[in-house]
Image (cartoon, rainbow, N blue to C red; front, side, top):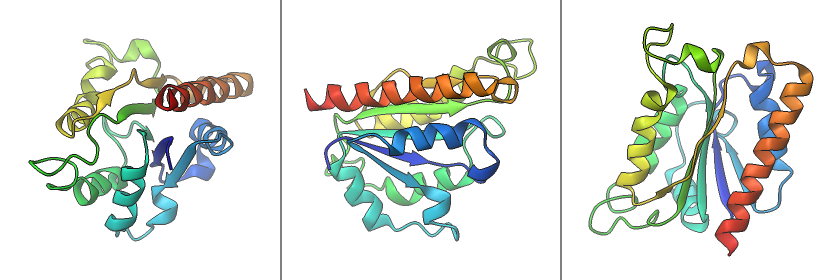
Length: 180
């Protein structure tokens, strides 16, 4: 596959208003492969060979998840710990991800203003995304501007639909840029 691999980590997609629509939009696009980590690995035992093969074939990698307690849901951490191994993703012989594009797609319950110093979340969202960005850098990947959706709980159905279209456009742009 050339295109983008979307690693989707939401522990309850059916209860999600926005992430469910985002991933449905992604699945409709040519050149996008979606791995729903909770669906594929309900026991959290990651098929490392399968995931590494998919990564090796992709031109871009997207982590899509809701912010849970200032980070990602647990399965995405398990995936990173299992799949991004020395000799594959980093180290002298670990060049499988070198120069691939990396994009974060995150959703938050809080509005954008709540992610600031002296506000409820205490820091800008970018602070909480740093570990993921550093992981990508460590693996030699090129960062793409994150796709951030704030205030999911207060979005109207029209807002959700518009956000799904915006996400589809971002993914299509990512695939198109990789093809060029």
